[in-house]
Structures are given as structure tokens and as C-alpha cells.
Length: 238
Image 1 (cartoon, rainbow, N blue to C red):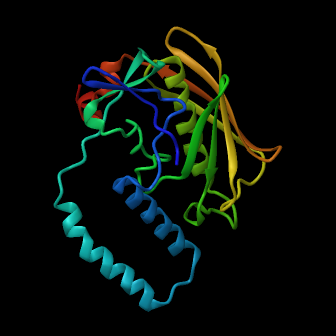
Image 2: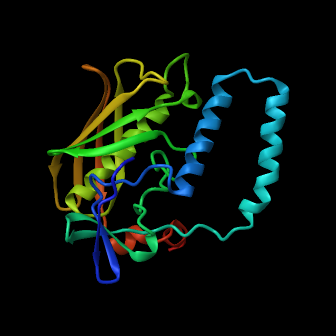
């Protein structure tokens, strides 16, 4: 289980964006998301018989009305800055102890479509152990290049937590040097190379043992917290 570091300050909870990311199957949402991920990869990896596939379809049809009848999920929006744990993300008590980015796309443990991904901080680097299941296969035994780029995009976002400022990816360049394998653990690393007033330049790579499989250079554009939290519809309609 990955550790969640929470410090109560009045009615708020301050959570360090690094290294704390919640995990474990004692949280029903995380357990359900993990189960759906396992199911998706199992369907992709195996030639199931028709009876088994029908059972899966019937179960999905049975549970969907109950799921869709529940309230719409409210995204927990973190703010950034210096708190009791140093630079990181701040959330309010309604987060129920969950990290504010747990349901993010690509690598959020509460997201049923995510990659298995555990991040931590080692000195000035963000390090993540990742495992790409069979559903992410492109060419035989290889992770689809777009998924590798997407994980890089998620990883470099952790640098925002390290500097305590919100932002978005402005540009990301990935160089593929060797196949990134499915169903084998690989390690991603990212570090801040350069910081300007409104941008961060971040370098990253993914490795299998000592072998570098791909490298990444990303430009992060820093924004104010209010703009970061605004819904895309509002920004696009301006």
C-alpha cells in the first residue's frame, strides 16, 4: 500500500504531492478501479470462450444502471503553495484522505483506465515504477508509443508539485530508443533542468534495468491557480 501523508490544519488537510499518493484496496473506489483494470487487461491478453465473455457482458449490463444512477463525481481541485509539509498540494477535508489527483487520467489509481504506476521522490528526481498491462500493447510485446508518451506527460507533472506551482504541458518530445515491454516492470525518472519565470524544462527517461528505452524533454507552462482550476468549457468559451 502506498502511503498517504496528511496533516490536519484546522478544517483543512494539507497533503504533500510528493511522495504521497494514496493506494491500497481498502478504499472501495480504488479497489473497484483496480478490478476493472485487471479485467480489461485479462480480456486483451486471453482468448476467452463465448460463455465467459457473455458472463462479463451480462455483469456489466446489470451493474451499469446502479452506477450511472449515482451522483456525478466531483473532481477534487488541489491548490499549490507552501504548507506544513513544504511545497505541495493543499486539499480540503471533503477529499476523505484521498490524494487530489488520484482520479487523473493515465496514472491515477482511482481511474479504471490508468497504468499501474507508483511514484516517489528521490532527491531532486521523481521516480515511478510502472507496469503496462496487455491492453496497452501496440506491436507484439511492445507498449504503444502513445502510452509511453502519456506516462511521461503524467510523470513530469509531478515536478509542478516539487516547485509548488500549477501548470500545464506546453510541449513534450519523446525519443524512442528501444521497445518498452508490456507486462514487465519499468522505471521512469524525471528531473527539473531549467526554470524560468513562466516555464519549466524537465528531462525524463524510462529504463529497463540499466537500459534506456526512451527519453523525454518537456516544457511546462506555469499558470495561476485560478486558471488551473477553471473548467475547459469556460476557457474555450472566453
